[in-house]
Image 1 (cartoon, rainbow, N blue to C red):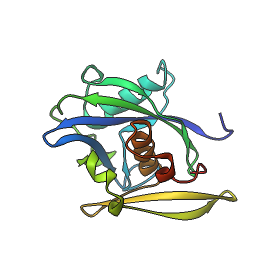
Image 2: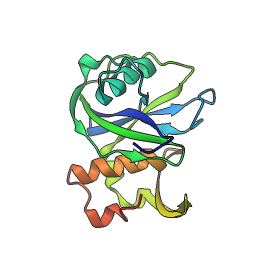
Image 3: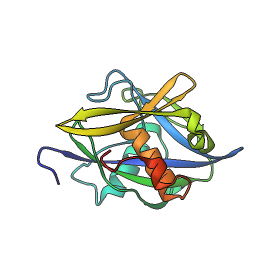
Length: 178
């Protein structure tokens, strides 16, 4: 692991929605320590009692929005992602056949919303820009959905999911230095 970085796990909740597959996102509150107000997947840092990164992600899913691990069919992990804010994030892809009633941790989660997977396949909904991070040029992706901006690590995870699922070509993914 990179020195000074914290391990974190997020669940990438894929829902069986009425119009097809959907992704579930959270908007963080202004009270959280990092990434205030940003759009994210449910997740957080590894706790000492977590048996593995999947346990971390599923524990955080329950803590943040009240979804029990028994309702999630974990189908795999995406590649780890390091962030400029000092985290190594492991995305855990989980399928939910339906969405139970949610119980939000209002200290951490402002809102939960769903986005059809098809939205991310429309090239008109994505934009990118280059930024210098720690002396390296990185591509930062952005999706604008109904007044919300999904960007940075979360957008990168969405694009990784699309690539692994065969819905996005490696040419569409962009440079590997993300």
